[in-house]
Image (cartoon, rainbow, N blue to C red; front, top):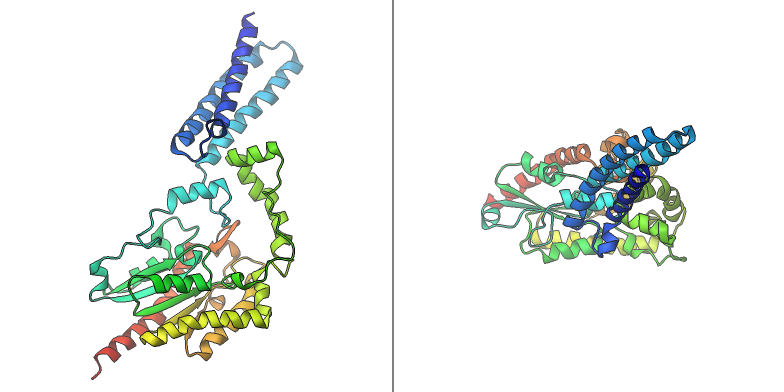
Length: 382
C-alpha cells in the first residue's frame, strides 16, 4: 500500500512538472514573461531533483530486474530532459532569424535600451554636438551589432575609442534595413554629420527583387499540433529544431532559388541599375553638404558565400562608388584569410564577430583620420 502511494506521489510530481513545463500556454502568457520564466526555470530544477530522489528510491524497491531497468530508463530520461530544458532557458545565442527562443532571450539580455531615435546608441546631448566632428555610420544589423553582446565591441564604438574626444561617432544601424530605409534613417536624424560612413552588405538589394514565383514555406510552418506546442514552449526543442533540422530545409529555399537569394539581384542589369539609383542618394547627400562619404563593403562571411559575394556583390558596388569619386573600403581582402569561425558570431549567425569588428574599426580609423584632417584644414584655410 505504501509503495502504491509513493508511486502515486511520483506520478503527481510528474503531472506538476508537466504543468510547469507548459505554464505559459496554460496561463496565456508569453514564455519569456518575467514571472513565467522564473517560475518555470526554478520549478523545473526543483522538480528534477525531487524526481531523481524519488526514482532512486523506487528503483531500490523494485524486485524485478526488468522493472528496475524500466524505472531507470524512464525516470532518469525525464530528469535529464527537465535539466536540459532548464539549461537551455539560461543559454542565449543569436541565430540571425528572430525566431529562435534562445535568440529572443539573447535580445532580452544583451540588446539593451534604444535611444530616442530608436538606435542601439547613446542619446544625443548638447555636449556631443558643440565643438565636435560628427561621424555617422549608417547601416543595418552589421552596424547595430547583431550578435555582439557588449556595444563596446562593435566597430562603431571601437572606432570612437581610437579617435580623439573631439570626434563623436553616431551609430545609425537598424536590423533588416535596406538601402532605401537606411537613407530615410539618415534624412530623419535630428542632426547632420561631418563625415558619413555607409556600411554595405549584400542583402541591401533584397527589397528590389520581384516577388517569389512560389511562396516560401519556412521550416516552422505547417507543424503538427504537438510539434507546434513543443516548438513554441520548449527552449530545448526549439533550439534543436533550428540547429539540427531547419538548416537542411532552408538551404534549398535561399541558395538554390534565383527568386529568393538576393545575390542574384546583382546579376540582373535592371535591378542593379535601380539599386545604383538608390545608392546615388548617399552620394548626392554628401556632395550637397560638402562632406566626405566613405563606403565600407562587407562580403558574406559564411564559407560558402564569401568568395561568391566578393565577385558578384562587392565588385560592381565598389566600381559604382569609385566612379563617383567616393572612397571605398572593401573588406574582402582584409577578412578572407580568417577562418569562418573567426569571422562569424557563431556557426548559426553569420554576422561579424568581435574580432572582425575590431579589424573594421582599425581599418576605418586610418581612412577616417585622413578625411577629418583634410576637412579641418579646408575649414581654416583662408
